[in-house]
Structure formats: C-alpha cells, structure tokens
Length: 144
Image: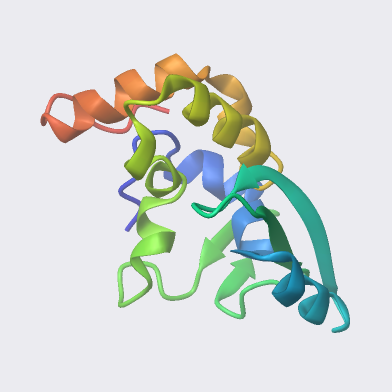
C-alpha cells in the first residue's frame, strides 16, 4: 500500500516513473563500472559523500518486473497490498527523511529527484518539510 504523504495512488498510477527505472547513488568508481552495463545511465548528482567526494546516480533503465499496465494506460504494482519493499510504499517521502531540518538540502533533493518523481515539481522544499513533519506528528494523511 502507498503510505506516502507527497503522492497518492492516483498520481502514481498515471506516472510510475520510479518503477520504470531503478536508481542507486554511489561513488565515481562504482558508477563508472555500472556505466559499462547495457541499459544503464550514470549522472552526476549535486551531492557529496560525508568524506567530500562527488556522488553519482546509477540509473538502471529497466522497469520493475512487478510493474504492470492496464489497457486503460494506468500503471499498477502486481504485488500491491502484499509484501514489497518499504521504499516502494513510502517513496518519495523516504528520500527526505534524514534532512527535514535542512531546508536548502531538501530543496536540492527535490529538484534532483523530480526527474524520477515528477509530482515533486508541485512542491517547494519548505512545503515538503511542512507536510512530512505534520504527518510524523500524526496530523496529515495523503491529500494528493
């Protein structure tokens, strides 16, 4: 089940970008290695690791095998309501969890991650922080 505050099932069913590609953030050396695989793209992120080295996103351009599409064009997860990764249930909220006190960082993440979740373009970093903090305090359900 989708437990995200920032998006809802209807939005996701029309998009499914996060299910059409898989991303992995890593260092330059590992990114270079993955780049040599077929159906893989590597992009530099605006982020650095704790030791100050540049981070890269490895994009596996292969859809999730659990992603299906109705004849109406809407997408769905074939394991919806069953066991599935928490990442799927809480995305995109979970990418902001560690940084809600750093508005500048949240905005940077929002801009970068919008390429994988276009719904994030509908928010500012401040709005994301407010919505997620409110939901953590038990005061908000998914409205989108």
